[in-house]
Image (cartoon, rainbow, N blue to C red; front, top):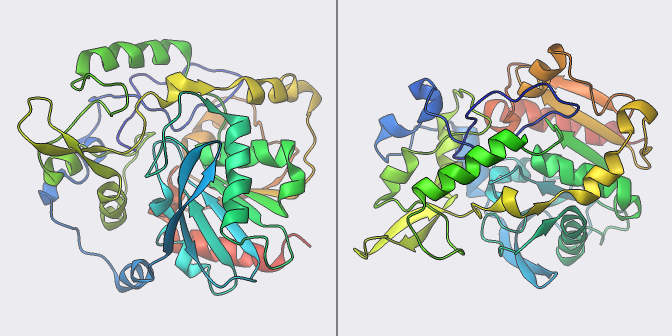
Length: 353
């Protein structure tokens, strides 16, 4: 969300996306796209205003002792869709997508543990994320129509959907990945992250993010997408950014300011062992085999495509059909929200057979 890369990752056997690292070696429109608005909202088209006016049912579902934020649209009894966001994001990344799918589905967007208004954890595990997804789907009625739900995940959330589809196929009808790569940050980038966290930390307690801004405008001026990319739809970036903030005390004791909701130690706390074990030998043996239907939607300008052109292996090759969304970077729902909705509507009307 508000971070980017210090260096381009070296070639590896897995792609790296959604990395929470900083760099100021970026053009202003990428480094600080909302700064020119000085805290004002960019103009938005009518379709977007109508979509976000369709307020979801907001609540929480408990899993592994944590309260998980959930947003739900659509009637109980309709087929279920579970929407899962990317790293450092939150459920409201789907607030202009979910309503447009709710005519035919019961739709739930969840905030993963450590993000949005969901509780933070001491350790984040792929197995726990899979449990969380099932708990949310059951807790918001996505199974009530008599068919198991379809999971849809973007980026890091797509990685969670992929893991759940491989390890818990009995929980879902099908899975859709949206511009999803695999792997965590390279070791050298992770080390840089740790050094920077020590440099910029301005709150002594471990349960708060590291930067607090005096005003919403100041925080919005620091918002950027990760991995870094330009976007023409600044009204969407602004909507997402405002809902990424929460109140927090200023470091100097001067009152309340604003900070990002996500756990800044997310990558350091992430236990990747279950995913690593599952993926061991995959590039050669093409194991494990998919046991539910899966499709990958991706942006034609995304870093995933750049990585493949550079010779990195396609982790998804042979497992699923892939559909390209034109004129889109990694954050497909920001760059081409209506094209994404159209693709999902068409896909879900005809697939899986």
